Length: 442
Ligand code: C2E
Ligand code: MG
Ligand code: MG
Image (tube, rainbow, N blue to C red):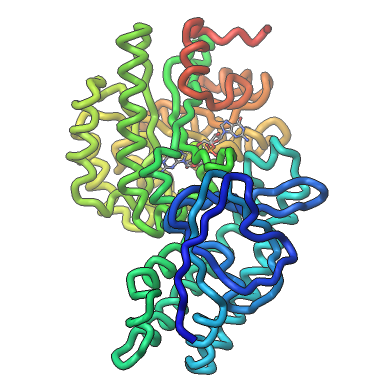
């Protein structure tokens, strides 16, 4: 059977397919926007929002089961239909192990998406906006299945387009097959999220414990998915690290944070320090340090007001190289902080060989401190050790007055946590900073 390409138009609100329909074709979105959703526990759960170049209904091509979700145009939309028989035939002609493997991958994919739906189902709309750990780990598993799927697509692709194959001459040519292959990965969606400006930063105030005055903040990235959900970094930073997108995203984050730092200074006369998280993967980019320096210059911030946060894992992978990088970064004039201290395996013994200005004590210690005398002792020693090494300390994840009091007692200079403020949008932050001393009596 020859592939017949027929672009089909749908008006906004039209269904392309409904849950339970026969799964006899897949679609590539040519224009417009499609929402894929399912009903779980009486609530509509949006699985994906797809735009130009993205593919939907592709599972039907593999296993021809009924649709397990509905797809509806949310704008006037054109799609190209890929009938099951077209690709089905190619798959059937392929090596039996390829078929077996592909079916296995698809079965796992379905199983995982079902689990993802179940996790979501149990959450309130507020909780859904912030992923649970279980959701994040299922997403990671899903990603690995998707990458296996992608590899299979590559094998099928090369089988289909190898010399002598008739597929290259069909209307469904090589370029579209390539698109199909690429578009099944989440990375592509994240890349387009960067292009479409779907990332944004929230800013969590950092207070000086002696005065409760906001003296700085940490910038924290979020992904505003077209479905309206706001994804925290645990749901996507690892993917951007795997694909290398973190390098481009990292520059966007640095520029956006520096721009806001400068805005607070020039419009509101608030010269706060801004902490920016760096992922270890960003150091693979040889131009990282000069590029960060030029971002700081371009945005007009004073370099000493920017503090780059690095986690212990970067130091542990290759301490000597990490030390060189950090010395170069420090030479730009920016400050450096070691983040989530205590969660990795870094040893106190060589902490002094890294040029950190600040040590951030991880929330796990802060939250265990009130109920454990041992943890209390560890926190106290950590603060003293940091001071002896010339570093100031930020206590992360302060959630109660008791925790804040104890950290004050230990002479911890700074604190950050929901007790003082959650991470805020730019406009919320501006509102708060008009009165920079946080009044906790209110
Ligand atoms: P982090 O750098 O340690 O950031 C602090 C995290 O703790 C934030 O989570 C913040 O919302 C959360 N937090 C703050 N106060 C409290 C509290 O009192 N209680 C509790 N339970 N949590 C609190 P978030 O925004 O989900 O970020 C998670 C991690 O993702 C960050 O940990 C950081 O490692 C990474 N991340 C965030 N933004 C970026 C970024 O722009 N670039 C990179 N490379 N990584 C980022
Ligand atoms: Mg951080
Ligand atoms: Mg941290």
